[in-house]
Image (cartoon, rainbow, N blue to C red; front, side, top):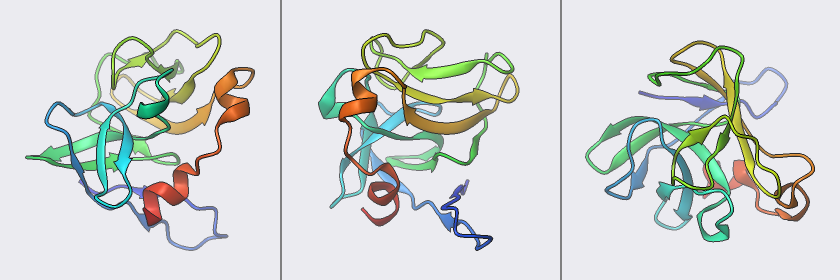
Length: 146
């Protein structure tokens, strides 16, 4: 499965998201962070753990230790149990998981459900949290240009 990211380039075609190597425990639907820009490897993201953020995408396909990703500006399909219109955040207790509980002190919004099985991905620090004021990593450039 291939996904794309909209770079806001004024009508130009979206850039394709490359496939990434992953840790063994990464599964479909997991929110991931980039472990290394050199090896382009991802692992399960965890809100509140600086070593496991920023989140970059949701896993939408996996073959062996290679994953396809849906990043901001795309729709991640193949999920289950979502509530239409509900905003989802990165969990601070379960690595890679989505939660409907908004973070209080630091955290990441991952997207909004557009159906019971699809999430419109929009990964941003949650406004008013320490994540929103202290993050300086470039998610888009890290994801696309490694």
